[in-house]
Image (tube, rainbow, N blue to C red; front, side):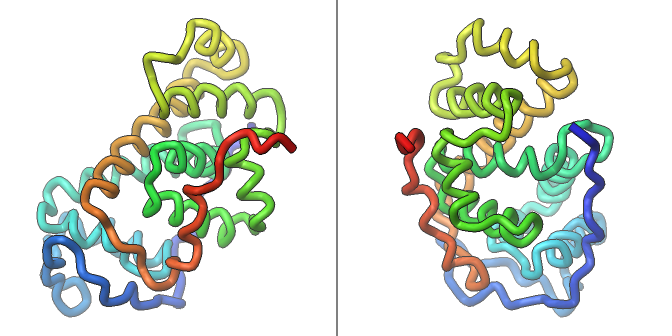
Length: 217
């Protein structure tokens, strides 16, 4: 796969995330993020400019800004690092699939919106990713099979699946795929455990966790 550079993260179309409460209050970030520690502020600005609003998850992480900074940088390294060879779209397709498998409505909704906004996906395209019936090629079939099983039950990943992954991807790409699966397992667990509400700009895309694999089409 060709390397795909991350897009310019600047947008002037910034929306309010809404007023939905969480199980703990959101921290006071101050006017213009003035109360966010300076070390974490660039990462928060990046999220806002890339997504067009400030996710509730990021707001809660900022109760521990020393950790939030590394969480945000880890996210960028896994999903948008330009040193790897797998495209950002490919990794978002995997993230969308595994977040559904992990039954995380919050993350699955975010991925659906990102795939639509960044790459022009339709509802049919999104359903095709989740059904596992419409891989784009053999490489994607192998990666999706590995990611799907690793999310549902990592001990069920067979030697054959690993060998298949190693046959179709470079060692670096195998680790990129594994990091994508593992990173979203972590985020899915945290976001579901916290019961994060969906932000107003994306709440309309909350239905995707209900789509089951192997539609039989």
